[in-house]
Image (cartoon, rainbow, N blue to C red):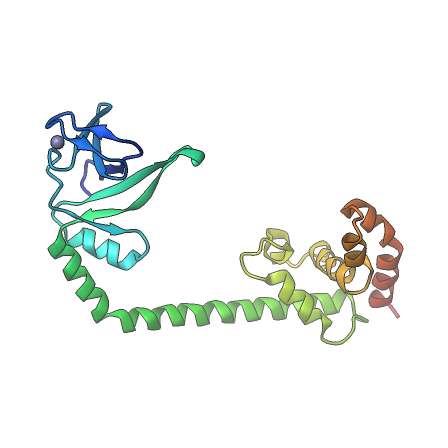
Length: 222
Ligand SMILES: [Zn+2]
């Protein structure tokens, strides 16, 4: 990236005409915009660059780094009302060099990815173990092993479920109970059946309230 920011090129959403050379520009062609005027890439002095679509982060980063001149390619997506990045324009030499670099250390990058994965798995395992221990403490009569099912489900990554919330991270009794009740609702009551029968969530929850209370009592004390 230059100190003046990225050079921007757009994928044309409509037929246009170059302000400088007067050439007809077809929809889908790359254009440059200057003060609301449209220029073809030849007039923009960018037509020697090649298009690299988004997708391979390492390749893109390296191709841009190797390129003396590069531009980012944007497209205005009408229904989202914003420009979205489609890729980059880079020098052919730079792209070829980047491809060689990526091929050369593909193995290393694969290993680094695997290590990061293993690290995350280990953290998750510890998290689930801790969560399960808390469940067992608050619900000592919970069926054996069930605390792990609940903890796993609650901790599922990126799912935005209770286990990942800040509250659950502190393993507060409220968060633990919330996760356990959610489990009981699906595993120990007719909640899912009621939903399938077309009852609203609100009504279904009302219908199973006593069942939930009963199971919570059973699991809590002797
Ligand atoms: Zn032109």
